[in-house]
Image (tube, rainbow, N blue to C red; front, side, top):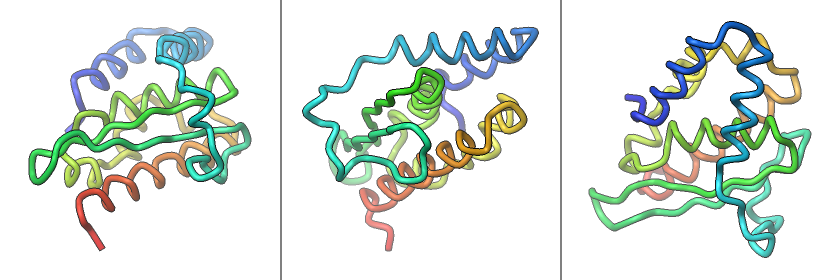
Length: 143
């Protein structure tokens, strides 16, 4: 169910030998993301549960069954910004109903993140996934 962009990230993570290289790659992914306009960083889109500041702005491209999920994200922490880039690769462009059903835990486990993120970053990652799933479910009309 993972997108080609996420598959590329998973392949790169598998190729990199140690976690220092993987952290550097994660930071590079975050740096490559387009920045979010500071005017959009409002409390309504701020993600609670993250140690750093995180904003996620959902967007639905299209209407009806062909509607696709997308979002913009921003953080004041480089590694978290990289995690946002990973989540963007995982979810962006999926049909709304499919985005709401992504098994993010299983997909992210392929990267081996759980053993290498601090408790606070893991909690923040889970909060971001929950927010994305809620956005996608709401957009798909799920109760």
